[in-house]
Image 1 (tube, rainbow, N blue to C red):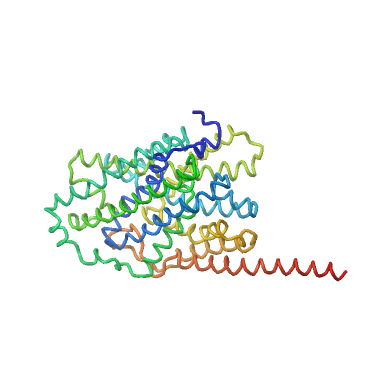
Image 2 (tube, rainbow, N blue to C red):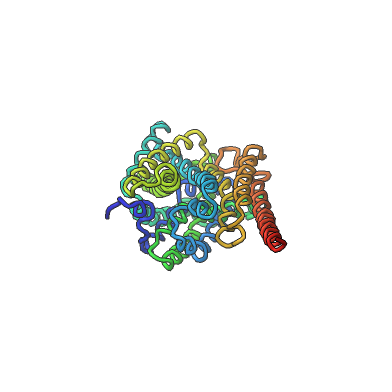
Length: 458
């Protein structure tokens, strides 16, 4: 099939069948941060770390039924395109930046995770491992666009689900059975309230709102061949992921028993050594598969923003489909390089993913939700853009000034905050969005009424 048409390249011509969309949804949710990062947080915090993923997956299933079909009927290609239709280019610029926060965070985290695997398997420097990561990712992404991504995602999703799940019974058998394991696990790691109510709520809110504005995931639904396929894909993919997401946390808890003195971010890789050279290689392949699927997805998403929302919108409005695809491919290379450099500069696997997601979740996601379901917000030009900008700045300020501690003194896998940054930015966004929209629309009505009264007097 030709990839000259930008719709084909970015959304696979909106003709992807059920099983490929399900695979794409699952692979989007499972990445190196899910494996290495969540295994590390399970090692440090236990089952309470599951809150970091639960809210998002539950909301994702809702997205498939009530959110994605509305976006599909609008014939959208990207999330910023919706903002442009209602308000014009300033909103679009802001939304492009905020969408990129999440996707570049995931790209950086997945790049680092994949490089860590190459570094461990081949005993090479991290920088060389990052270069290999970059080349492998580009090989999968540049040539085929969304069709290639969806096909490889589905294959990788099957490998990841089966391979990682098998690790649990195999490692329990290695320890000596379930009773031996449960007796060796600290009580704190069975405690759902181990991280505290504030952090648990922040994780649930962050993951739920992140999924609402997660363009990479939304584009999976937009690529489906029908609304019904999109709905079923998110339902099936969400149900499978909801169960699977306990796997990395359990792996991390088991790793604590077997390797009590390892670095949390190395918990998953340490577990792979239990199964010999061949077993270690198999699990390394599983992690690489998860990284490739995530990287190819997020890189393609950001590249589509550059080609569709920036190049075609402002630089060359008369651009042919062929030139848009060319710019997409060039952008893929640039985004991949940028994500690799960010991952090298900020080596905190899970926190890279979560921080970018929190910025987007606290600012763009509530406004996007309002545009779809609240008619009044569609005419609130100043309130919507102010809510996004100030909410994002509030979250960033929370990251910079917040009182944070690593989940473990042994490694920075994820931070536990005294006040999570999303709890700083999200209230700012909601207050400006809700009250600003009501006031802005009331002023417009008063102005219109005043004009009508003036006409009657004259």
